[in-house]
Image 1 (cartoon, rainbow, N blue to C red):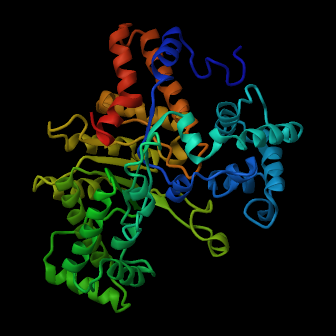
Image 2 (image 1 turned 30 degrees about the vertical axis):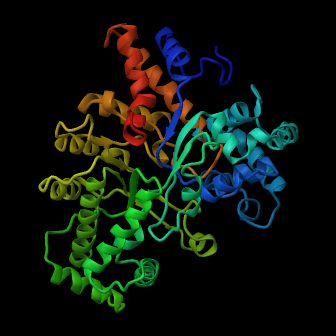
Image 3 (image 1 turned 180 degrees about the vertical axis):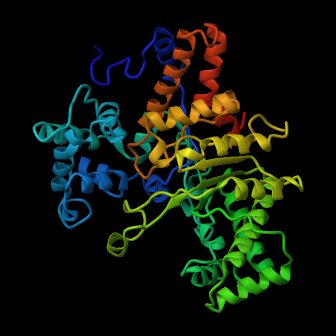
Length: 469
């Protein structure tokens, strides 16, 4: 029996253990998509307690705490962070089987040296004191935590209207020790159906310094902001898409009419919404391809489902879940609109609904054109799927229906500076999968072959895509 989170955690075969310990464990991290606040990296923020760095803004933990019966006062409310931490520690024994149990204990070990510690009400006080003592040391600032994990690149998620002042300030700073790059996230500019769309367009117009009254004005403003992002180091873009709409090819007059109606606070029908969504995404996709940027599409969340929670805390508070809408026809149509004109950028597709994994993988296969290995990617297990079963399912289907050798691997998609052991979690799982293939005779026990695969999937493919050679 292995010890809890021991050296061979998740590594069931000799090949898996060799691959992880000799190949994967020492590789740097390319975290090409996350939600870390750039201002905290710029300020090299420090934290006064484990409660604050663990629980402030982490809706994964908030959701689990509510499920375990913790009242909102001790989750996001007025309780101090020691009380919130104690509440989280008390429910830890209830989290067996949930990835939070593994992630939290990996974080205690990897960042604070608390190897073998098991968090519960009885151990909470000692762990609190030990972790807080480490947080007071220089290596546990925002930058220090990233350096501890050998992070080479951090891709934040940023609105087109953002100034990017922190990215610009740090772009050529040799003391940083890693790259922080912005990612262009234009959701508010194409979700024309949302209540805040007209006010957002006014904000965008103010930032670019000219009115946005036509579709050409809008795309011109977005491309101007995109170029600002590229100047600040941008290498990737991202789009959160609850309902995927490809729309139809239509002329400027129709698109101007749709935009004009919405700016006048008139409602639109579904066909108008779809045509506008598709037109903006196609226009932007062409701009991404021309600039060599990666396009990411995160498809299939249903958001803010609990009205009372949304009214109390706003978005990203733990009220989101998996949508089950079909995506195959719309996704293929959208990518084809770009591909027909030779303007499909390198693309990563993510489906929150795991039953769509095969759709994502086989769609990605449709649009490989030989220009770059894995030009269209089936992205890693996302959000509710970045746990053991979800990641293994995604990689198994990618391996069987596509080419896992070209996969750009794991990302944190996190708001937490303590989330980077998730890359270790992924790497251990992947090495175990490959080890099982060897054990069952599915692949040869060829060290060069296997080592190359592990290095590529865990590091080199992502480095090639997001950093360059």
